[in-house]
Amino acid sequence: MQKNYPKFITFEGIDGVGKSTQAELLGKYLNNKGINTVKTREPGGTPNAENIRNLILQNNFEALTEVLLFQAARVEHINNLIKPSISEGKIVISDRYIDSTIVYQGLNGVAMDEILNIHKITTDNFFPDLTFLLIADISETISRIDARPQNKNRFDKMTKEDFLLIQEKFLHLATIFKERIVVINANLSAEYTHQQIVNYLENGILLDSF
Image (tube, rainbow, N blue to C red):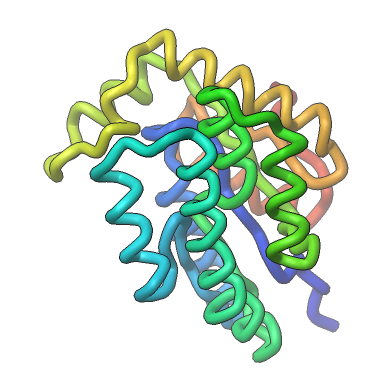
């Protein structure tokens, strides 16, 4: 009998920690087991949401305005990709979701409760079934960002101190939403990180504590 996997899985963490890689590896793992998956990202995932993404990444808005733009993209994403895919029996794997908004826009002064209230009202309280929070050494993640060939957006240009604070905020969220967020040590190879994720998904336990 096939295991009943979570239908909506998200990856969170600072830039350069390996979220996209791990989302891709998990999708391939599940596909190899005969399970259809959809890999997506936030902000983005649908044409309208991608347009909002470009607007956000290339401009500076007031903090609350930015939250509302992220949430507008998220509503498009949920209603036009995530929920329809789940209804078709697929597992959706997203690189970022509401936790990133709480952390990043929270640093700009918007309270977590305010962001959560906006999210709950606009999405009918739609949260991931499971979130993997990847944690790694800040210097290594910055090196990965610096090695990227494409143009960097304003979130990639943060300082080491910014990244440290953001990672701490993510870890704090993991203590609040411990029933959903699983902290993964991403300091070693991508293959080892993937194995930890698969082991948790299949057995409910981690190879490493972190």
